[in-house]
Image (cartoon, rainbow, N blue to C red; front, side, top):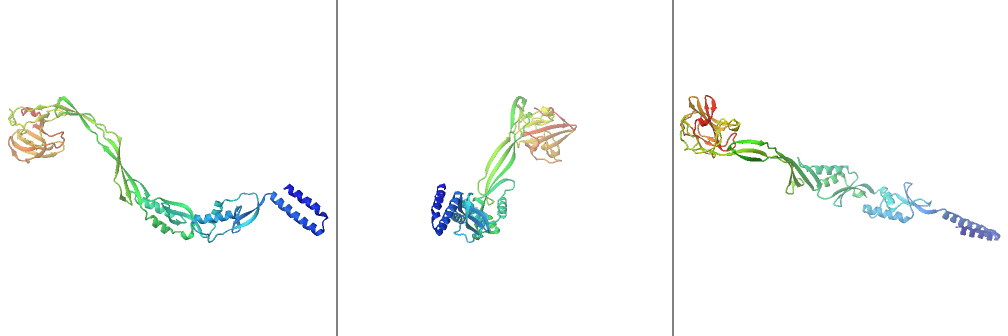
Length: 403
């Protein structure tokens, strides 16, 4: 730059002796050259302002940047050209400063174009479904439709069968959809619901028995009480628009393991000897038509007030002596039972029957069928519970029947 200025000064010196008109032209030319040199050397350059309604919104280094921004704006909204671009390009001299990018100018153009709208694009699997200005109505419709397929009593996760997205976007006002149209389209979409139903279940404890050969059959004692456990059962079912679309998947997890109950039972059997129906010294016959197994004696363990004779269900139960039936029916402890009055304050009771075959007031004779043995009431297995009652008190039956 200094070289150019020296050259101009040398030129002026040479034309000082020239005619007046020539000197004026030379001085004017030198001034212009000096001004241009001064401007260039100070950093001033030609750029362009992007204006809208008189306001400067951006500055670009060339007109081509502005044209590129217009092209990008058209591609963004999928149109060939902008019909109402409110921005304009004005050349200016500027000193230094930063120039705006194509993307920045593109955004300015989109924001100030009358035929361009900013809102939200609703897309399904990447394909545009609708363009809307406000997403509130559509988001409400989405939440309502998904929630409408929830399964009562289950944890549910619902989603559309296709990928739905609602994203900010610029688009042509010609493609703007109404909220009603967008909501109607949402309500047509398929919904997949995965429902998990959780149930807490009781896991029953097992009963373990230990045999004690020193105790008669029928003896039992709880050594340790059982405790039930818990499990969590999760059933997963997939639905399509509220209808089952897959086989249920079931998973069960133990939350608390049960504790077994342990019972000690007698393993010593005492068999009846002699022939059934043989009369004892008291005149009582055997209360069954067959032999049986004494599973519990008078007074065994829990203060037993009779004897238990183990026999299969349906075995004939007979009266040990003649008398009158004064009771027959059902009790929670005895199950089905029969009571016979033999006179002189002596009565007998036959309990845990499967079925009674006599009625109250009926007279029966020794050995007559009165019931079929069973396992009803508070019973641990098929047997006959037999009692002898004298003067209103229960007494040891072995005194009256032959064991």
